[in-house]
Length: 584
Image 1 (tube, rainbow, N blue to C red):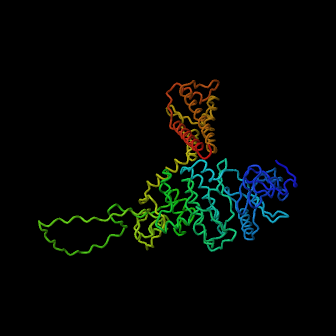
Image 2: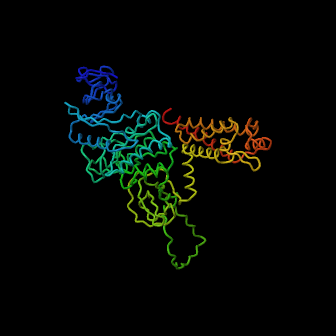
Image 3: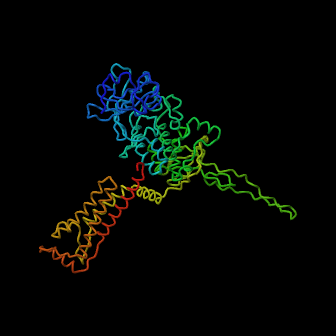
């Protein structure tokens, strides 16, 4: 630890780039030549509140700076200290609000607040928080490029969960600054949401504090630019969609004000995700575009609905696609058949030129509209989203019921490039979605394989001869060879420990050891010398009979091999994902 006397830090300021001290009158760093902030930062080695020693700068902006410091009272624990650089009363009030928010929350994806104080003899306020040592999603994407859909979903899912936790508070807490720079990924692959500097307590009816007004171009919704308190939980949903858009495309979404101008001129305001990253499914793309609708009423009403849309659990209805040369149609009920009076058909003269067929003007099919209107089916009580509010008749995607609704005026929102037609819900679709989700979750497959192998080893018959069946418990409890018991014990331990291991390499090693032990055991029973020496009991006599007879492998042995094989395959795939994932 660097120890400096007060006289050595007085009249000095730290350079945010190289973390070296400079005089307060300096405008550029004498060590690295970079420009120093207009508001001087603390000097390296400064001790705050007789407890925290400043080490270097983690980040700074126009209103605040964040330092890495060491807590002298708690074994020099690393902490993050946020300093308010302005003395505006509104900013001080919002700074205190941020401290109260962090102190009142408890979630594994949120940093903990330890202390909040005003430095004696100074007009600056400080917030001491848990230090999260990791990399931001912003830096990660700029370093490695756009993410795959699987990786993006693994990163965004904890953020969706923690934002939902914030919205469930009473009153709800609106973060209002969700962006890639405020999402941190640690070395042990934990995700954290940080920076509650402009957070707001309450819904749209609560007035936004002056110190909490702020926007991030590309990630803030249009209502946040007004600063009139119109933000609510749907504002965070917009930012979540914009963050996911950035993760999947490595491109900053257009600013909300620019999108409004483009839509007023009839231009496409948002580039399709699938044109940049073809691996993204249409369902994920559609859900992101609904979350990023410019009107709050057209977004998902909760984070849970957004998550369900990303997972394919929210039903989305799109307008029918018009074929070239045919006018677009809507599903309508069958009209009542009315008698049509017959009209005489005038005879056509043989000299009359045939009338050429009329050319129906062709119009390019109008793609579906981003944003959604929530509807409810009275027949099956299912909720779903309609992307085109001008539809009068729609079919419920769950039960197929034809529903009449009052159409609203079509809104001017960005049009998606590729429509996603949703067919009526079927059991086979649910099974396919469930099976695909199961295959994508390698941890669950490892647990299933471990359960199969453990049950097969302990309960199911492994070998048999005639009517006599031998299970793993029989081998452990009888007077069999000590080598057999050791091999069976290794196999059981190898299968059981994978139920609790969280490291794919450990699961792979344990399953290989267990499978090898079991194979050696059954081959020894089938082909080796099976007579235990020095043992004269009924089991020994039965073993002699088994050795002299033809031994058959039972379904328990195949269950053990199948369970271990499932563990090995899933652990290998899990390990490959971990290696190719975010950190190499």
